[in-house]
Image (cartoon, rainbow, N blue to C red; front, top):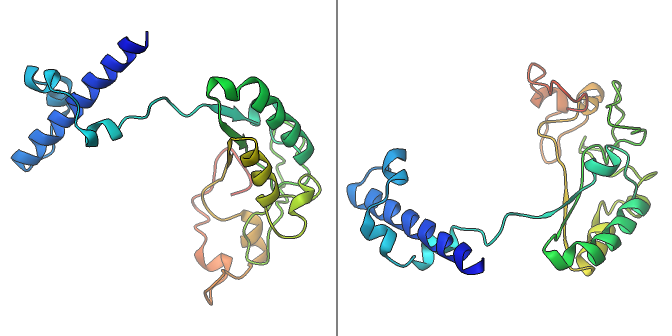
Length: 199
């Protein structure tokens, strides 16, 4: 099985190297049809080191809090789950531990979003972990403590982040760090998230 996987990887790397080389020589981007039909020379050639680096050895593998806790995970639950993940999943390559959306919402309750969101914000309108759910963040250190604990277990730590500026920051017209502007000056209120009331 590993030989087959490596063989496919080698062929794909050679294809990418061949397509990139052809595009560079011609001075134009390779068309998708050309990339799908590599020449036999490109297929037979061993992959270049650059082409091999383009390929991930495996897709990112991990655990995401949404699937078990929706918006409600707490620090205690995260630490307990990370310990279970280290024991049961890490040996099989699952090494990304992710706290999903609304870690900044002190009143998160389920798979449904609170329609009147009250995200925990710093003085500049940036979301920070809700200290009632993530007590190690109460000193202003954010996820530093939880991330360090997950890293100490041999895993990577991630969080779900929404694009944009929190609606609450705009409502309160908080100052934008490092500028003379305020949240209402920079927010595009015509471009809001259709499925989440936070941003």
